[in-house]
Image 1: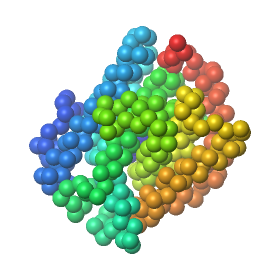
Image 2: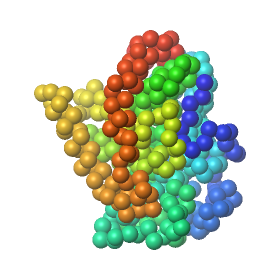
Image 3: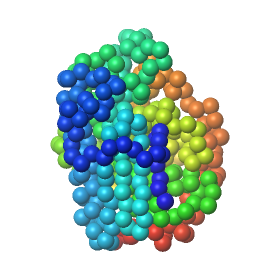
Amino acid sequence: MGMYEGSAAELPGNVLNALPNVDDLKLFFADYDLPPEMLKQIKNVCAEHFSELQLLGRSLDVHRLQPANWVIDVKHVFASSFFARVGGAKGKYQICMSLGVPLVALSVAEELCTLESNQQSSSLDSRYANRENSVNNWFVGLHSLSKVSPGSVQLALDVAVLLYCHEVAHAIFGHCDYIPSNDNERRALEHDADFNAGAMFALWVQVLPSSTRKSSSSKMIFKRLARSGYLLSVILKEVSSSSKKYHLPTSRLEAFLSGGVFAMAKSKRAPSFSSDLMADKYWHDFYHDQVKEIREAVSRSSLREHYEFEKDLSADRAAVFKCTAVVRDRLKDGPLTLHRLNISR
Ligand SMILES: [Zn+2]
């Protein structure tokens, strides 16, 4: 069974066999009419993104997959839409990710980080007219990535790592080999992948290849998870139509964050608390502090319609606790034990 996220489930276009060069990018993304300086910068971002996924994949391979005779291949395709998916069965899986993942994330991060650093501006999105937005219209009005917001590249790379973790989670926790019998089970698998993606992200940002991309302090790790999870939720609000397979983007974001907190607590990198209630309050406040500015930037951006929480959020949250989490536990303790990678060594 295949799992997919984002805007398209259909078979994507040309597969990349190597790192894309400037001419490839110019050709495949001709509709975006990107200036030469921007193409060079985008090529470099793609190179960093590829090297991160390669390193994380190699590490997973050596420590976890090879001992079990498992394989997870990753391929990229030239597509501007934001999607990723994983397919395969019985220990042999393929993740397919569009170049749209790092590039849409970069376009949105660029817009939001620029707005964040320019809080006086009531609206910088005059760049985006006629219902254009930074998901569908990349880098409108820019000749190069902004110098005032170097954080946008980091943020975009983090979004791509988080989505990669989500696909890996589907494979190693046995989701691809299990056929869900209803929508509750489908949502439970997605919820499980989100939770585990948050947990993996918290561990993997400590070992990224470039020294400027590694984080070791628990505050910085959670900050990165909070911001990239939030950005991913904004993109998902734009590209995913309402679906019985997924919870709302904000509920999904909460699953990513819970996974990250869980991983940090388990590895004794999180502060300790005398009660769960105090821990919840601490992380809740910490999260809101980390995303306050970027959230405010969304309200002034071309994606401002996604600023508010979804109108059905409270019912959706309740469904996570009452139903999805229960189904997830039942699947994890039951059928998924037959399919998941044995990592309890
Ligand atoms: Zn998924």
